[in-house]
Length: 303
Length: 303
Ligand SMILES: NC(=O)C1=CN([C@@H]2O[C@H](COP(=O)(O)OP(=O)(O)OC[C@H]3O[C@@H](n4cnc5c(N)ncnc54)[C@H](OP(=O)(O)O)[C@@H]3O)[C@@H](O)[C@H]2O)C=CC1
Ligand SMILES: NC(=O)C1=CN([C@@H]2O[C@H](COP(=O)(O)OP(=O)(O)OC[C@H]3O[C@@H](n4cnc5c(N)ncnc54)[C@H](OP(=O)(O)O)[C@@H]3O)[C@@H](O)[C@H]2O)C=CC1
Image (cartoon, rainbow over all chains, first blue to last red; front, top):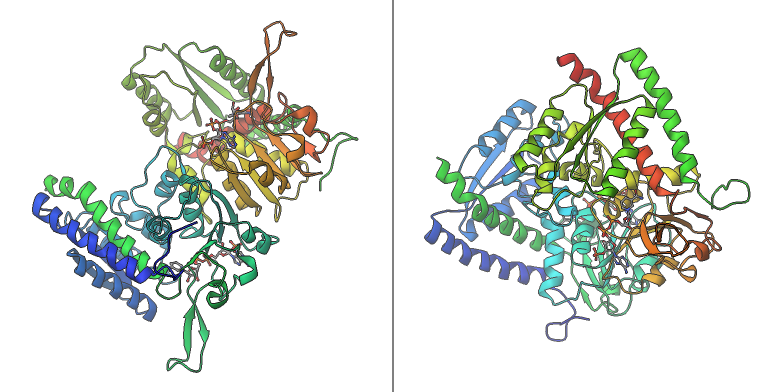
């Protein structure tokens, strides 16, 4: 079904992401040299959520390492809707900014949908706008940016030489940011796709039919060994914390797949952490680079 | 699995469409009386394709019967891109027009995508714009209009009391106008959905698992009896002409399902003609009515 590295069936997302980020760094040097465009990523962080701070820090680090400009917008969690939207608008109008990422979730008093809609289509690096998702779903249309996490899943399959066309793929989960766009991407790659969710009956039997499984449900170690067909490729998007007294911080992170069990039958499998997570950040860098290539010159010329 | 009329497992799309059009006619009388808004549907026909002329005539007839205003725009097939877009823009700016339908296909020299994009989102009665398809795909968003043919399929299931939630549904075809939006609607109704297309392997075995089959492939009598699970509900979207010497015109219309065979095993089945076709027109009337309700008052007030 697929190529493997050494005798391991592990997909090392961390190594693959590092490789991609290396490629982007090189391409960025060229872009700067030849076109005078330096990709610019702006991150907008509201409030002081620890997890959001960690994510933004990782994204900033990756951007700087790739040779991008990084624009760090930090706002108090007392910010008003108007103030936040005005900040986004400032970034929309800044020709040095090619990509705008508003870290979610936003505080409860903020209308998240309205903020995301403020982002210019050509700077929507997460690709979460309805228009972009529509272009992703429709044959013959091209989205401005493909959402990073599902894009990372497909990129892993491709780089490991997994044959997607004609394969049966099962996506567990139907969220706007992972499940639905992952299903659309797989359909475009000519897989035969089944989408499961909390109302699905016989999820186990459906997963058993799959050559490719993408798990994005948010339930720790949900997918078991006897659900997975021998040789199937398993991409685990889930990030769940479970109590663990042996750890200093009292918990550890696990995926939506029972990794220790399932790795015995899977043809290829991603670990958590070190699988889809690092790929998501690499894809954010790729999207930023691509937006800078597509719209960078123009924007700066307009000045 | 479902209720049936008499001892027949036939879904009479013609009768159901007539019922719906009756409901819309009544609701329209009320809308005119209470709000002073008469739903207005504009059809734009370019050139002299016989089939397109028939479709537009049927839509016009249905609109007039429902008590709508109908605006009949007919253009030579020598019309330029600019002229056609200008016509659409005129309709966009006409407060009496609540719904704009551009009959497809357009002549080869016309950029179809650009014309469709010209239609105001709030008058896009077919719902084919990327933004609308995105809103259809995303949880928590509401499209302005649901594309008529897939909407008609779901409406048939609902009016026949078919339990969609938790059912396994298989959609054959992944076009922008039928397959993909049908799959999205079924997912939203909590079905477990598999999308098949020309690259799918073992289509027969996949269809055998389905409680609900929606066939939209454009291949005459493609789905056979031994593909269909006893009691499954089969919705046939296909319209294909096959040679038939016993007919005066030399051909007859058949669906994508081998109706005579499959009706022996299906719990419910739609015929062709007289199934999805009439429902598509009824849904066009429903969409027009709904656009007039949502945006009609406002537009006219602005005058
Ligand atoms: N690695 C990364 O970079 C990222 C990881 N994640 C992780 O991925 C996971 C999913 O995230 P997200 O999509 O945002 O989550 P959501 O909570 O938005 O969606 C979860 C989905 O899983 C479905 N679901 C729930 N229970 C079941 C079940 N028993 N069987 C099948 N499906 C089920 C839900 O169905 P229903 O719609 O019926 O409720 C829903 O569609 C989380 O663990 C999250 O932390 C998310 C984003 C990025
Ligand atoms: N009743 C009504 O009101 C309407 C009826 N129709 C009819 O519905 C049918 C489909 O229309 P439309 O969606 O526009 O057609 P398209 O030609 O746009 O799409 C056909 C789809 O069927 C898929 N397909 C082709 N061969 C197979 C196969 N062997 N197995 C499974 N899938 C296959 C194609 O796959 P791939 O993507 O791989 O090419 C494609 O996705 C037509 O007969 C059309 O006349 C359409 C609109 C309205």
